[in-house]
Length: 274
Image 1: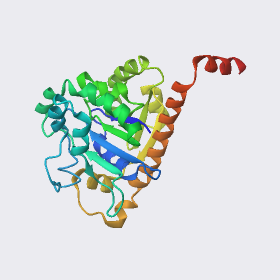
Image 2: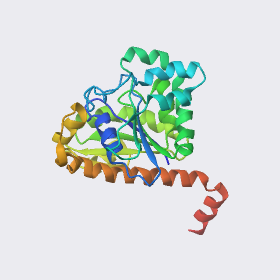
Image 3: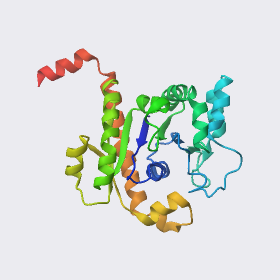
Image 4: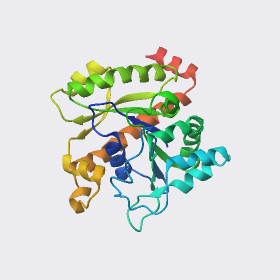
């Protein structure tokens, strides 16, 4: 199980659309779960977008501020989750809706680091992968504790100059953070739109491509704004490839966790043998 943060920059595709596609298609073993936590300080959008407001109760990340002050953050987290699993299936695809207003982020200053710690422990104790939607600004400042604690940080970018130029300084900041946490996986989720090839972006941004998604405007519109896509939606190129993205990110996270569990002496011995 792993914690994977998805981040973006101006000029890029919707990080929330990418994260939501990941939630709906995440490869799951029996008895396992996946959680998408909308932790963008600028606010969440899945409830008003994909779910079209059809959610019973005031579920929100903001409610965890009170739970945290009362010393019941974990219990409060479970109470805020929405089940997005297919009908009649186990509650294995869960959503933590984000803030309803950027103004609420100020009250989360003390809660972000404790939430990062909770996700790090909870994904093991609850048998759950955690996807963090950090939007454009959530990987920095107080909420940056979430990115710092993730096993993998994936920067969502498309193949345009505007997107790459906006992502580059943010990636440099993320690389500094990753250097302080040995072995953290950091790379790109590339949206196949724009004139620049994968090799160009890898060279310019200095990160490997962890996964690729097609530019599928029709399916992306449903994820962003809701609507009934029917069977064609579940078979869309975006959702099909999102399942592959999930498997690839799981592999990167597993490799990082294995590297951290390998004794330093054993790594040196193996390196010497080569």
